[in-house]
Length: 114
Image (tube, rainbow, N blue to C red; front, side):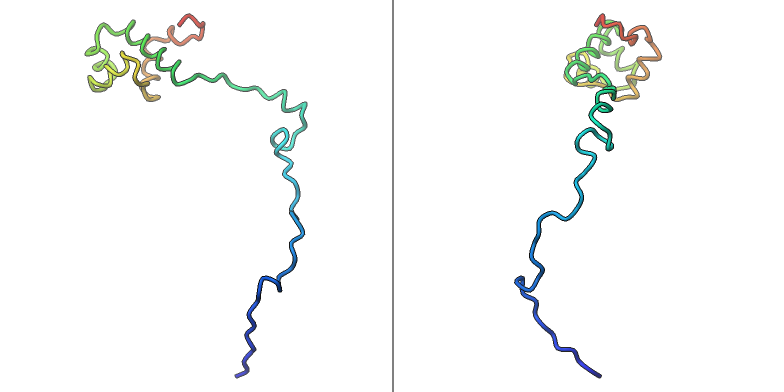
């Protein structure tokens, strides 16, 4: 059996660093490798803040549900959750919003009255 001599490699034995060797990222400037003109054509969906959503939902349930108890029964949530909605402390999950959209579609037309 032949044995090879082991040699300890010191950092000085490694190749010298020459800076970045990879290509520049083409996606940084406009996204997906497109030019700046294409970036201006991309549409941005409207953004609603959590505060605006909470205010909208509190207003909706206070107008549509006679009481907090009724709200809890209509949406199948606890009384405390209904209280949090009425007081504007929290927003519902998506399934509850979808229920409201099916029950009261006129509230979600996007006219901006709320």
